[in-house]
Picture 1: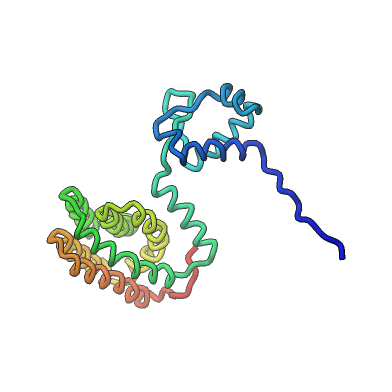
Picture 2 (picture 1 turned 90 degrees about the vertical axis):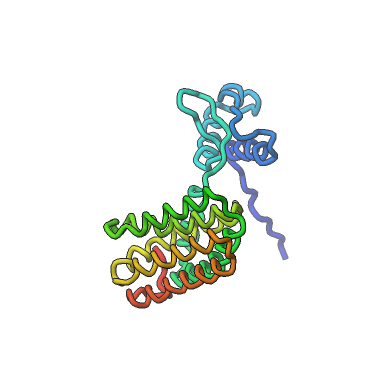
Length: 242
């Protein structure tokens, strides 16, 4: 019986350079706001061509780890924004054919505890943000696209009020996938806007009183209501989200 070996994967040079810079950023040897050396200097240090450095920097910039500030030729270390990270995760979930039900079920597990934590950790500034989000959604003249954005923004305000970055990052991809179904449901179900507005107000009030139990209860009710809206709007719960 002959022995077969797997092929050796050859990693492009720019990927090795990008990995080396990434390691320095993750280890905090390079901190946010620090400038990298010039492309010429990096090419000298790594012993590669400038084109290899340029490709590595382009990859890190697209990933949000580097940015070029206006008026500067040098790259600066940055942190990926939550929305950028969530966009990649949301795209991956969509490519895995996640369904409306899966997103809704995940929200039922995530959002009520987040509202509970927000009630304990919120600040006065958080309450102002929640109040503003409630008011923006309550505007009856808001176009569908704006109303959907404001509904999702209310969840984001709750997430920020937890002061837990991990929860905020976990929440964001789900909200991006929730919005397409809201666009369909919010105009097909006449009472949808008023019920969302009432739930947001109750959640805001509970968080304001630091009533964690009430915040959890109203958020759970709010998420359950989305399922009723889907059913009334004839949205197939097992349908895949595009």
